[in-house]
Image (cartoon, rainbow, N blue to C red; front, top):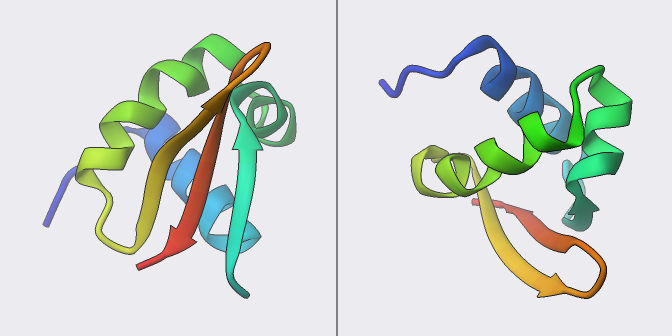
Length: 74
């Protein structure tokens, strides 16, 4: 089983809940506001979670002003 830090667990819990019915598009700052972290904390963990997570698929989707992440259930 993959070990997650407290922050990673909080991010994954938020993403799992948010995409329970399909897919969603997220920005680090919106996730951060919802779970009480900084956008930098979330943004630095999302690429690692994209590789580690087994139950949600996290994909860098677009970059306008900030990176958008596409998240789906695996």
